[in-house]
Image (tube, rainbow over all chains, first blue to last red; front, side, top):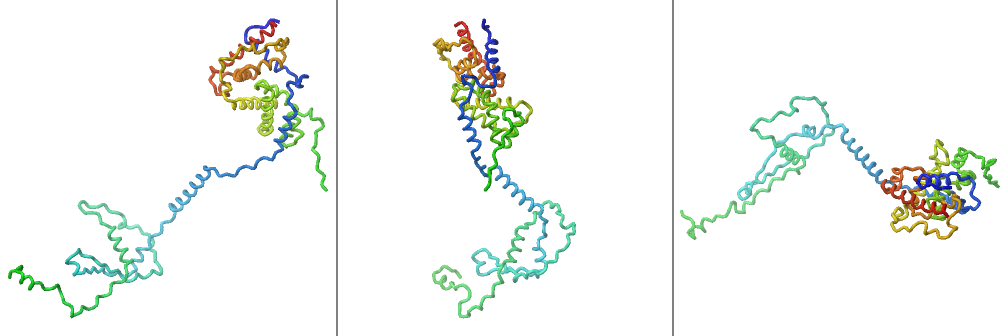
Length: 199
Length: 193
């Protein structure tokens, strides 16, 4: 038999030789696996499979956090806006004029310190009568006029807040002791004596 | 007192069809598992022997491959032959086994001439039977042997070999050429002898 020198014959030799083998093992036993292979496979198949690890992957943690955040956000977004009872309470409370008492003695030496006595304790609104919402033109914001500064509502709101939370008004001071000298000391004689004061 | 129910053996395990074997394996019947192993262990051992460098490595591949077969039996759809499906698992198992070896695809420029390894006359078989050809194959470097097996016997293209082994198509062609050169030299010499 003359063996061809090209690779095609070589390929066919190997392919046909290996593919044409019978199903039974050869007498020499070169193609028969040892019995221990099946024993190992059988032992592996009969071994109890390890229980699946219960672990929460980070993905599920992120998904859960996102769901919670979304739920909270939706709750606050879709919550029906309740009208503030602040206005109602103030409307029912007796309005009292704000008194600004300036301490005249300290006014001479330091900037005026305004003491704003708040009203007596605001009576609790036992029952708040809610008015139905009626759109009016007053609630619609109007464009500002030129040259007119915007109203500073922050200060006004702070004053109102302070008025509601302030303690009861200060008690009047006791009457002045007549034995005490009234007014600043008279330094004129001293100044005249030292010649610092000209008549 | 409870009597353990014996494992029901079919009338003749050798005559079971592939479909019956698959169903029995899926049911977890050990008799069917053994029957499937007995039917396919020899042809599959021949497959992995061609990829392995020796018998011990081939037995490791065979064991790992059959464990995969039993584990993934549920994925067999019955569209093709069971033997072909098992053979693909065996080839993939052999390739993954080879990939674990460091530099198994490393080229061997100092690879000594193949025929010098066969010094005695017994090494040169007068007839080219499968056992002899297998011995020649197993003396090739792992990279040459793998590419030759995949291309010539398993029918892979160079593109598929490159994808499977993570090499370039040029490397696949180069390794195939060298494998053929060595094998042709030794086969020619054996015929002359």
